[in-house]
Length: 328
Ligand code: MEV
Image (cartoon, rainbow, N blue to C red):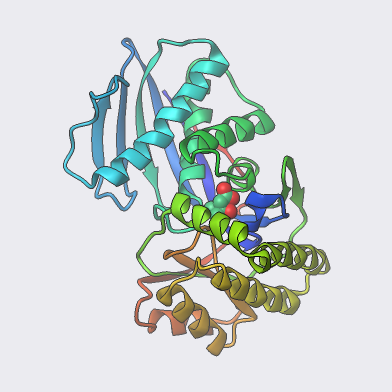
């Protein structure tokens, strides 16, 4: 049996624009997905998941088309979760050359599903790492990040950047621009998160931005302007200038909003944080619902969010220095 964990993340800057080759700066946070893997003596894949905002479910699945899992929760959530695990296992079969191997997989996570905190990337990174080790193969962080990216790319029909998976595999603050992925020095960031209890459909939101970009030159310019914000943001991060980081996050949120990926609850939480004196606030991840990230060293933003209608949960997040952790 092997057990690996991998962190979730927030985007300080650059989500969506990163899909079109602009840079992005995500930051790993100490909220983790843990995946335990046990080799089976048949070819089946059995997945048990808890705490994925799915009330827990168990499915036994042999990968045969039309012979899908028989469970009592929303089919779209099950097929989304199963799609990632299935493809992660396909990557492990490929990298180890063991085409017919089966596994029992148990997933536990404190990252809400589809809420912009990188739950799927964390599950995929931890699952590939644990399943490969169960077969005696320990992947280097870059290979692990590559396999995890290929997983997201397949499941999301080719609409994925390397940002989420690289950040989860390596930890810390990272910069991703196309295929170029690197770690960044980051100061201690006073990160506060607000969660509206909802989730967005990443595929649909990414497709919406793609359509706008194709239809309007000014939408394409907006995507490029996000790239400019990220380049300024990198400098502010290097200078440890939290006030400037906040201003740029506010700007980034405005442009994401113009691209149609914010929502009333995300905007409400962003404004609650700003009114409470946060240096800045923005949605994080694909948007449509889920989480915002704000910078505030005082308790004011957390207090304000806890009284904001539509905000279901608020918490402080520490930067996760480590990416994947090998626990057993
Ligand atoms: C989703 O977490 C981030 C997006 O930029 C998509 C991606 O980078 O794959 C919206």
